[in-house]
Amino acid sequence: MGKYTLKCLACEKEYEDDFFRLECDNRHVPSLLRTEYEKDKINVKEDRPGMFKFEDFLPVSRTLDVKGAPVTYRSEQLAKYLGLENLFIIFNGYWPEKGAYMETASFKELEAPSVLGRIPENCTDTIVVASAGNTGRAFAYVCSRNHIPLVLVVPEENKDEIWSTEPYNSNVRLVCAGGNSDYTDAIMLAGKMTGLKGFFPEGGAKNVARRDGMATTVLDAAHRMKKIPDHYFQAVGSGTGGIAAWESYVRLREDGSYGDGKMTLHLSQNAPFTPITDAWNGGQRSFPELDEKRAKEDIRRIKAHVLSNRKPPYSIKGGVFDVMSDSSGRMYSVTNEEVIKAQELFAHYEKIDIHPAAGVALGSLIQAKEQKLIRSHDYIALNVTGGGEDRVKDELQIHFLEPLVTFTDEEIHCDGIEEMLQDILVTY
Ligand SMILES: [Zn+2]
Image 1 (cartoon, rainbow, N blue to C red):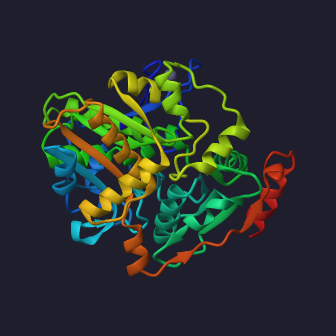
Image 2: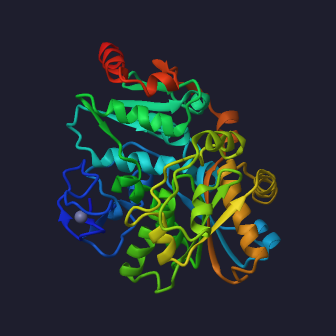
């Protein structure tokens, strides 16, 4: 495993990792920590399980039993249609013919192994994860397979997203945020849970392991292209994937083996819920307080419902605003109609189904081409963050995880919620 320290991006204080640290101890503006690996050159180890082949740049103390890794390939048909000479697809999902074995069909299967591999093997406390769907499915799958205790908190309307190709073990439990709850309410409920003894938070964007797990998409792309991509396209909900991509670029630049090119971030959201796009395109350094009712209505109207975070790590030091500034990045708003068209195009030319969020990313690539923001010979990495779900469901048996309990949004915001959680989680 690679040796590393955690460095605060605000005050530059460095920490030895205690395996749980999410923040700096010093008092200053909110800031992310970033992993500083002792090795500055990555050695890709093909004999490791799944995405652990990138373990040199993962803050983990052990590998887990996983199969998934990003698979980058050069597009021919879609590239020709778009008039792009060097379009590379970073495929995250299930596509055995391409060597892609993420059975949850989502790139969140890159976050879970990295986060869980950071936790010491002898830890008996339970990790709590809030999710809009894909992240939860990935954590449940990896935790069940590796017998790691997990409580998952998901909006009730997304609970059908929690499925697996293997029956769940009893170490994995599901709690739903019901009523008029959305993902942000699920995050609040998870926050209450982590106040209880024996439970700890996964940490979201603040967890370096989560970001460095997602960052393997850019490592894989550069490894396949043999250079740093000129442009990187991804759809974002919280923007954490964009932050991770940029951090990966910074490491590759320091590595030096992939040239000294600059990578531009092209991040996208699904209209009408586009708060990060609106903030960035409006030149805002701070993220506005969203009107909750309006935001929830907009979230219900988007096809890519996983892109639904109302409180993204935008203004935090090292967050979305900073990485977009550093990369001279672009943000896009992609309509549902454009998403559907992009999904159809991908299925037609590349012969595999992709998630709506990946359709958002492709929709933004089409916009960039039309607006002449990219040149036909540029090296372009398109992160297909989820695909092959239709294939999984056709070819493999699917198991669902039933909720242990469902709380209404009134219950989540009431004073007695901690006691209710204590009773339920300790009793069962
Ligand atoms: Zn600090």
